[in-house]
Image (tube, rainbow, N blue to C red; front, side, top):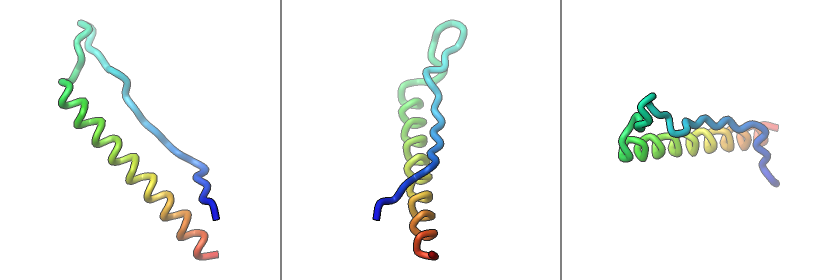
Amino acid sequence: MPIEIKELHIKIKVNEREPTGQPLTSPEARQNERTQVESSLLTECVEQVLQVLKDKKER
């Protein structure tokens, strides 16, 4: 039985820069932020899939 995810929320920030044109964060900090975003996205997806499975099991 296929699982359908009807809603997916994705939030991202794209290269925010100061008025001088310099990046706000170092490359290491951006990588850490990216890792955290990916981790939270994965966690959210897993939670939604588990909720769908739970809902289907209750029927």
